Amino acid sequence: MSPRADESRPRCGVAICHGFSGAPSSVLPWAEGLAARGFDVEVPLLPGHGTNWEDLERRQWREWAECFEDACSRVAARTDLLFVAGLSMGGALALRAATRLNVGGVAVVNPGLGFYDWRVRYLGAIRLFRRTTLPIDEPAAPDSVGDEGDYQVTPLAAVHELRLLFRDTERTLRRVTAPLIAFKSDVDPVVPPSSMRRILGKVASREVDFVPLHSSPHVATRGVEAHLIVERTAEFFTRCAERPETDTPVTRSGHNA
Image 1 (cartoon, rainbow, N blue to C red):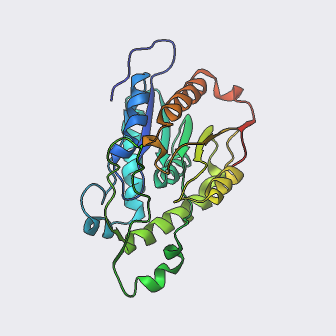
Image 2 (cartoon, rainbow, N blue to C red):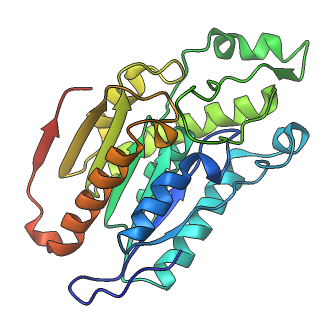
């Protein structure tokens, strides 16, 4: 997705990451909305996604991280300022990328560092008896738009990799210094509020905006408040792009997670 010409600010790009077992379609309204507002947007398909669960079973979390960072590098090469964003697991990957790359800001929607699903706690024992389980993600909400790309079953080996990714991301959160906007659904059956609390409590970002979502499912980027996510992300990134880095104030706005 290419940006519109706008000489009043730097050419800004956004790399957006979808969630675990999902696909770029899950964040398409977010991507299209930002592109319509002049951002150069890229949404990579992570390895093992968009194919079949056997493919996902063979993948390691570092492959997902490398794929997303490769997309970040492509966007950075054709723009003046890179932003990163992600949904659920994609939020963790975006935060991790922000510790390794020069980014102007980060946006996350229902970012994960853990699960509600009780099966994850007993993953070691369950893996002794089976290779897959029912999806740990929620099904598409009745009022969501289109297909989120999830598999009908989830390979347990991939869930183990997801846990490793979450652990690695949490260890690096204190190195996140870029401005952060974080969206969280009030009712999210997949990722508990503790994930957001840990993120907001550990990042070193000088500016943090927290935006509660009152009518959204876990995949909020396809829910009824998807337009709000687009608008607030675009406003936040534009503000970051227009303000010199040295002028960034220390602020914490929004509600508590």
